[in-house]
Image 1 (cartoon, rainbow, N blue to C red):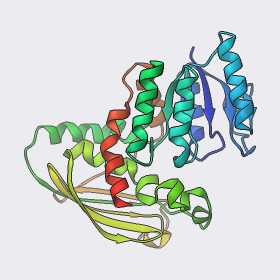
Image 2 (image 1 turned 45 degrees about the vertical axis):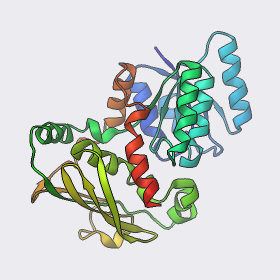
Image 3 (image 1 turned 180 degrees about the vertical axis):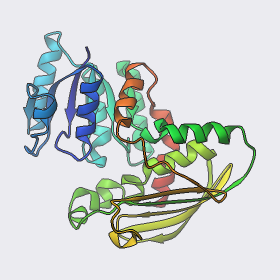
Image 4 (image 1 turned 120 degrees about the horizontal axis):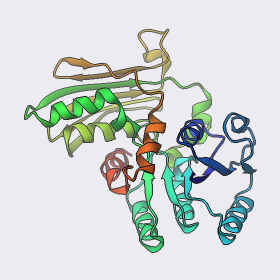
Length: 289
């Protein structure tokens, strides 16, 4: 049984990590968030120590380490602009680190993390759950056996309320903007499917939506990303995903419910996605800014 700690436990994505820790048979020993709205812990790890101050959280984890009861994994679910600092903190605790997307906002932040990996001998893993979606894995194999250059359309509409612009997510200096905060998985998916990006052109860049064209090795992709509910044609839907390759629609809306648990299974088996996997998608979104 592996011992986990998590920072940012009150955040939107944290419950998926708590569920994954539980479903892989491991234990959460400590959690931290400046917000104390963390009743979600009762569903998973009510006995976990909880802190609202980083200094007390750090002191507790160092104490555990000095007593020979340190953590094995440190999970980062904090706002994007804090990821690199918290990742390096986890490595210095002597733990492997699991960080939510995006790993960092800019490529130069990666160097410090890589140096810390070398210094501590520990590893950093990131969550790229779309690569584990069964339909997309099948598609990846099919494309790998084809030399066809594809015309691709990618649309992702995932409405957010007024709160979004007033939170750290609406502050581009903290979130990296829509392309980084919400689109990063989609751009990673495109690189994974169609090879390296050769050029990128922005067609539209607004507060709630953006679009562009990216030339990949095996495809030209026209993409649209929106958090505006008015862009939903069917208002009964909570979100809309479209991936169309050379006129063929790829249905991949199902099979998302357990992808974080799958990600943890891969990480615990030593097959998780490492730093090198995220560099190209981070480069694309940072250039968009």
